Length: 211
Image (cartoon, rainbow, N blue to C red):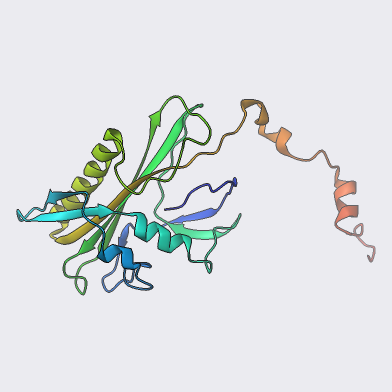
């Protein structure tokens, strides 16, 4: 789950499938497994299309594992494969994202599923009140997590895939940008530099001359 962590970042996103596998490896679950996964209790259950109830568990241990991975930072301009959901909302408000991970019962044959969603939860936003939430702390979060879990099993029913467990959570990520910081004409964002100045700054010689 990618967030704005105190920085305004822009990446070159390559939209990829939300399915991972078969024989995939999830960081924090398969590789470098977070041991908190083995002790946490389920937040609830959801019924699969075959009638079996499966647990819905907090996503936080997987998020923590991702945070601890320094080898793949989301730097500005990075070409980043990702499952993409976007939302734009006039502020002040709280924009939130939810993520669910469905672990396939037969991982050698079926793919795991990543289900993402975004929405505006609160119209009024106050600094320092927006924190990362591992699970359904409030009623709105609890309902949203349930919707994510239901969507995962619905996809499983359509694909004929059984999921043995689901991890889900909600997070609030925001970037507060003053309205006056964005000019009416996007061209005003460019530096007022002439071609001759830019050529000098780049140490470029006029045509036909050596530098």
